[in-house]
Length: 166
Image (cartoon, rainbow, N blue to C red; front, side, top):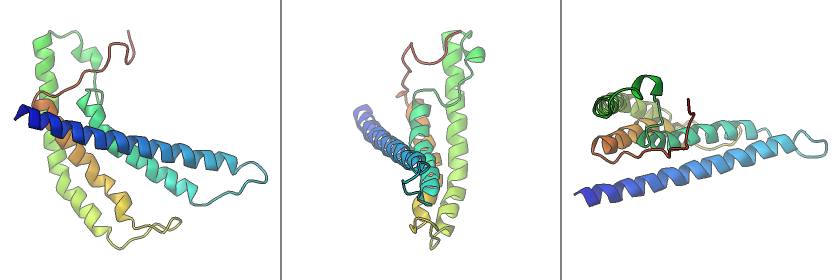
């Protein structure tokens, strides 16, 4: 069973990493087009601002679960670091349970939000808004999945050189 969960986690993590990379690449490309559009002689496109917002939202949507898995989502080291290891793990699990409960609580509202957007279209890009609003469902589902994996013992630890040192 543990191997099946590890394989599922690896697949979900790969999808989230790929989505993060694609969203970041789109964001870089669109911002580059915006910067070049300020140079005389280069065309300036009206759709770039909207696409940049969409890419940023998807960047957050795909990466928030990965950050949670690594314990980097919201971490108050000043409070947790001085605690004994056992108590620190207990608090981390309590936070995982709170995140899971909150995520499960908002999934129905996120579903309604996405469902009610059916038929709307983005003005400057002319794509269905449901493709954009779907990220509102992606975020709580991702947080619920990754917090469940953390509770089942699949948490990752960031490298020691990561983050700020005090």
